[in-house]
Amino acid sequence: MKFIIFKFNLLITLIFSLFCIFIFSASAEVITVYKKDHWKVNVIKYDDGARACTATVHNDEIVLQIYRSKDEFTLETFYDDYTNKKLDFFKFRIDNNQPWRDDNPIYDDGWLMSDIFDYSDNAAKEIEDEIRAGRKFYQMAENDDIAWFSLIGSNKALDFFDDCVSKGGDY
Image (cartoon, rainbow, N blue to C red; front, side, top):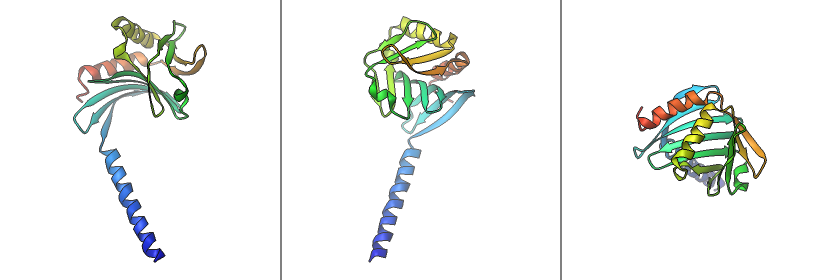
C-alpha cells in the first residue's frame, strides 16, 4: 500500500512540475539586443503578443532596470534580500546631483518600481540625461545611500533601449 501511495505522490509531483515548467516557460520570450559589461537591453515578447523593452544593470544580487511597454514605463530596483520591502518611497540620485523622490512607488516581490509616466516630461528628460552622463546611480533611504549601480556604458545601452522602444520591441 505504501508503494502505491508513493507512486501516486510521485506521479502528482511530476505532473505538477511539468505543468509549472510549461506555464512559466510559455509566458514570455526574452531576446537580448545589447550586452556590454553589466548592461543588458532585452526585448520581452509575451504570449499575448505584447512586447516590452528593458535596460538593466546589475551588481551581484541587486538590479536597476528601466522597463517600457505600451502601458508601463518604470524605473525599478530589485534586491534578493527584499531590502525594498522596507521602503515606502523610491529615492535616488545620480552622482552628486540633487536626489529624486517618488512617494508612491509600487512594491512587487522584491521590485520597487517608480512610474515614469507620473513624472513631468522635463523631469523624465533630466533624469535620462543624468543617467546617460552619470557614473553612479545611488538608491537612497531617507538621507543615506543603500546601494549603488555603475552607469558606465549607460549612454550606449540607452541608445539601444530607445531604439527598442521606437520599434515597439519588434525584433
